[in-house]
Length: 133
Ligand code: THU
Image (cartoon, rainbow, N blue to C red; front, side, top):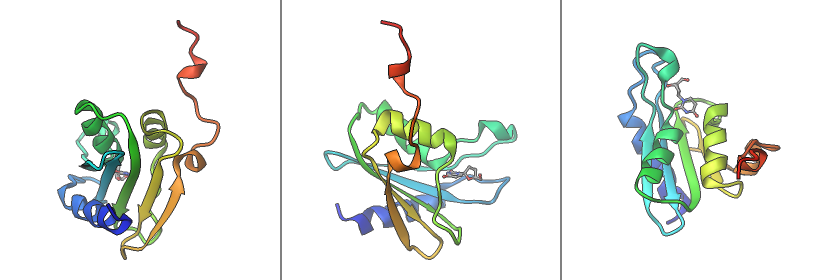
């Protein structure tokens, strides 16, 4: 899977967003180590805080299907700047996809920038802090 193919799939996933309130469409495409792709798009509702971001939907779909090893996630939005995942999504991605996950952030023109998950969320909280054997 070439990086540009994953980018195209994330841009396409944006069409499935339900952003009735913000009107901000976001799409995500998550690539597993064995080449499977899970997509997501943001879903809003009238209780705003219950909004589900594109990234978390893609990760949860993959986890529900039994996937545990992830290589890359591409995220697309109609913003001039490269879309940058929110704090909640960073926590979920680092815990379930790992610090080495490549995060491809795409802007409205289809240009993109790639960073490692560990650079988006340094000093993250994880299960090692919980002393419950
Ligand atoms: N959103 C995402 O889906 N992913 C991001 O990386 C940033 C924000 C959504 C949440 C909400 O539906 C809308 O974008 C505006 O915040």
